[in-house]
Image 1 (cartoon, rainbow, N blue to C red):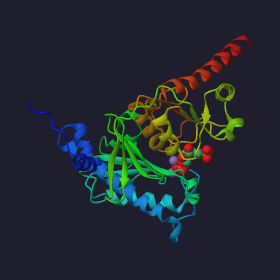
Image 2: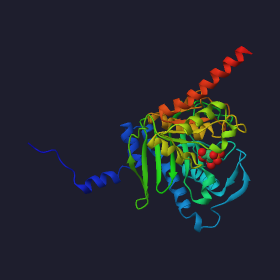
Image 3: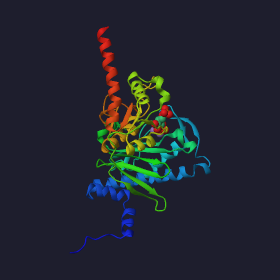
Length: 353
Ligand code: AHG
Ligand code: MN
Ligand code: MN
């Protein structure tokens, strides 16, 4: 009887080194049709953007004009870092002459950017946060890029891009790039969540984790407790519960991508609730919360505003913000339970008065 063939070590290594992002998309879709070709090419372009940003970050301390502020304030009312501008332009550049993407909607641009030569044929829109966690850049702490791909619906004849104001369930792909000790690209096209690690010697993102599943529960809670005084009582009750019960540990980096990445792999919950100053929350729906919510659900987790699934929220404006509670199913539900309990108490008080 012929023994089953045992591949040689170098054949295994070669197969691993050849599992690039574009190949993985085809493996996922099990076909080479036009849509699969498009998605594979789209992911390839995003990978190129990630490599360009990673390269600049890796030498930022040695180059003029990379770190620090531009002196501008963006549509978010936030001061802009030079890396925000650079990364924003990188994503635009990699999609020119792609024939794929007609519009790019970015955290850094008030209106979407149109690439006219792509528009007649390019039916995709990239929504993205070019650098997430900008406050970390100048001190060499991890930052990320967040992206989602949506199919353009209709002709957008008035350049309002109003077809983007739809729920996160319209996303056909989503992911992020984490610029950490290694550069990782994590993505989903609706068939699970998969992570690729940049091999600088190859200049390729190589598959490193397939079908990532977030544990039902994890010990980590990730929140900026400096905002405690600004939170609703329900969130405060949850935090008090964390402080009074064994088995929880706090981790918070100031960059959503890194904090989410830890939760995705190890379980737990990240939350950025509404505050007195920003009742609707700080994080933006279209290119921060919705892409990560897509990943969270694909990995068996959840993402909520506290009262509604993030993926069901329909934005009224491009840069709409939302509270975000995302991570393990049990831990997201625990946060929601404190919000609901407070709401019940407040409702019963209201009835009595
Ligand atoms: P960005 O740098 O794209 O503006 O995003 C920063 C966000 C997010 O990355 C992070 O979780 C959050 O801001 C941190 O906010 P605080 O500094 O208020 O905690
Ligand atoms: Mn961000
Ligand atoms: Mn940003």
